[in-house]
Length: 434
Image 1: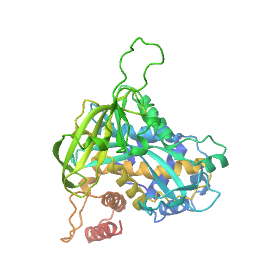
Image 2: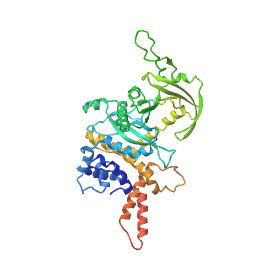
Image 3: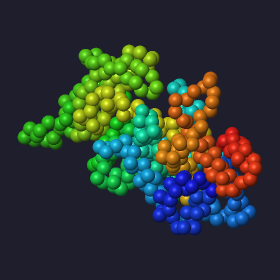
Image 4: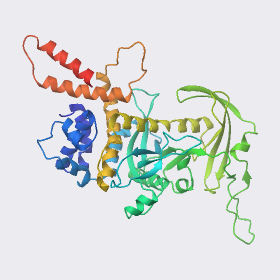
């Protein structure tokens, strides 16, 4: 089994990261990844049709022992996505997700918060891997109004027990996020980047360590302490003031006069009242922020507060940037549902740190292929009860499968009376199977 030639051409952009032999095995695994029911290495090489032709250890070694860099692979994918990035700045999404696992010998496993089964009143933990992911948020030419977050860089978070077992230095998730930002920002020093993340990545450990060419938009707690910039030296003896004059908290800002906006975000239309100001947070007393307090007037949402290091931006811009953060949650859902992000069973350090991220890199590559080439072959389901305005990722994956099968059917070279009907029947069956 080999993937359709247009997708294989896309993969050639990644060839410089590995040796020729490793890359050939990697492409074979990706072909099986697209078609396999369960995304284990043996399951993928069986789906690719190479089981028994080459020893399975050769494909395990691609992830467990071969010499290639996960960051270099992600940066190669970023180069493919650069034409879709904004000219002024590149919007980035940062978040973490849980991959549930079983077994105690797997590297890096531990108990982590499980947001899917937790509630506001009860936090539930689960056994598995916690991944910190950085993705590029783009608006593709095919659907300018639709935002995609395409993952490119990954870090495996180890809780303190797992770090001790692996004899590794414990690092927090925000520290890992900053490390990935530094990798990307140093890779393109002449570009401006803008990271969007939830409140877990909006504290001092990220805000005070941002690269020079990177901005940040995140959430604030309603009781956050806000200050003016520290004033000029007074000439008096003693240590200069670290913080300026105290300002109202976001909760106290709601008593002030604001302005009303109509927002079209998250697929809905809401009316809100916003109050904005320039202030410094307690964690970063010398970093001026645009603070926006939001009071919903419709939709049933609660009061919230946001900030951005882009101080010249308005409240509507800050809220629009933060709303695009949701696209990384969509990427997590589709990678787990359609590409088996949680299914690989490698247990050594390199196998763990490389195999699962490949599922999300494949997600980015499939979206890229569909926008460039695959949409020409997309056949939406002819149903009257459910009409999708855009192709879902499941549709993109099905199109890649059907086109791969169609190209291989054409390669058979069927000819003679009735060959057209045979070919059409096989293509229809392939489309249904995909």
